[in-house]
Image 1: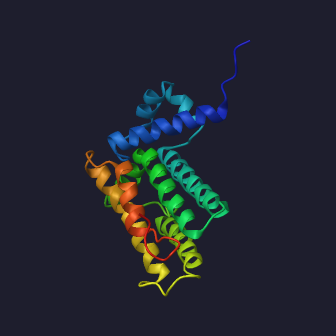
Image 2 (image 1 turned 180 degrees about the vertical axis):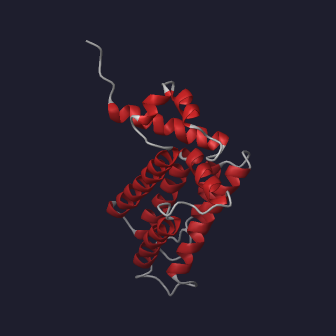
Image 3 (image 1 turned 45 degrees about the horizontal axis):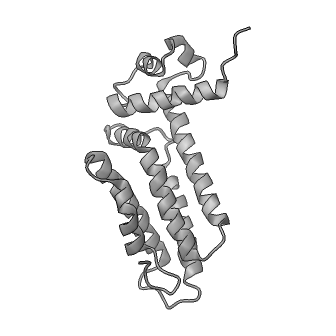
Length: 199
């Protein structure tokens, strides 16, 4: 009797193939046929899992949002001081974004195409969640220290912006090494437990 294909594994394979095709060809220039070819399956098999390109894009974004939410929850559960957890957050986010480079390129493509992005791609909420997590850690870390030079909310916005800026540079310029930028981000933007910055 032929072995049944693991439906969840096949779905993830198709989704990964779609993200690669969207990143390589642009979302508007990609077809279901291209995705099927990339996944090594028949076009009809894609439709068994996803009804359209938009469903594929939506699933990819929702997957990234879920992984981000899990990352934030994991950092929140970790023992240790606020600065150590904030450093872990920065390192973990950079690792996630380095792994998700193709998806980051796709999201940038969708937003820069000059058309209104789908309403379910709520990047404002995505950034709000990250800023809130960083603000909470900065506030917890500041309880014992001196008054910060900037508000935790402003610090969080700058930190999130710095991470996104590094990702954008890496997307436009392949010579930019995201992994090499983790230490500068931590050194410059993560306060130490004593109220300075980590070294």
